[in-house]
Length: 356
Image 1 (cartoon, rainbow, N blue to C red):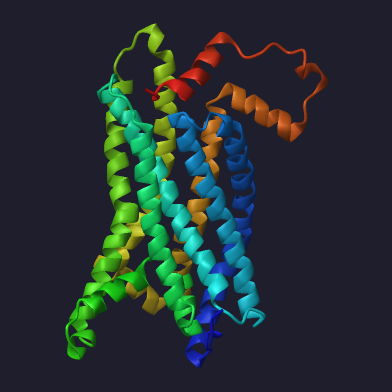
Image 2 (cartoon, one colour):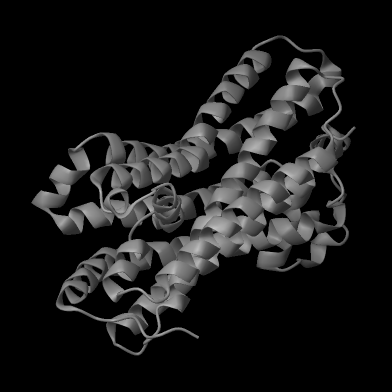
């Protein structure tokens, strides 16, 4: 498919550093991957029959992306081990795994933002209908954009040196190659192509893509959380119990997302507008890339575990079904009474509250 990536003394040095980066994280990432796959898969199977409703479909989007991201991280770890042992001679499988991780992470972020915004709209304007077709169009458009960006990165770097490939692997900047191409296309002569100004334009475009993927969602969900907390502080009548249950569930999901995603956002900002991380790189390149590895693998995996866990714990039916599957249905469960009316009300509220 492609020419084998060239290996140079510089790339061998980069490989040594990346091995020191990802190897210590592998046990922790594996430990997080197991519950992430189990919980998200369970959420997917539970809500799949209700995929035509807004909230379940959003849960499905987030859990599917988190599963894909988790599998991508595990595949990346395996491919890196093959690369270290020189068993892997082509770079495109590794590039593809990195692109899948970045793409799934950004789509999961978008799903979390969509859920928070939709719930906030229902709080501010209770009678405003959430249009599923509009939401679906936004998801498809956003996903198609990042698929194009990731595909171009893989296509461009597949024939590059192993040094470039490995640097891309240890970098969270999806779209870097596309940004470079755009900056070069904007030049009218050879001098411009080779100029520092053109390089700065590429960096700014890469930074803009990072802002779009992580920083902007953080700002949006922060505003949503403030409005949701303000609504929860108001006294509510008894018939609003299910509405409060839904809002608290989504608020918890948004808060977990905000904390985990803020780590990535802060990293992007520091890496681009200050010299703090460059100083860290000079002191210890291993420490620098360790921070990168935690930002693009461990922290997203933590979010992928906590989000479905919140969904399960906030639903009595889902929690009971999960326990039955994991521990096996005990003899008394078949004769046990079903969920109470309040539990069913909460469950139904989560499913229907934002559907027009």
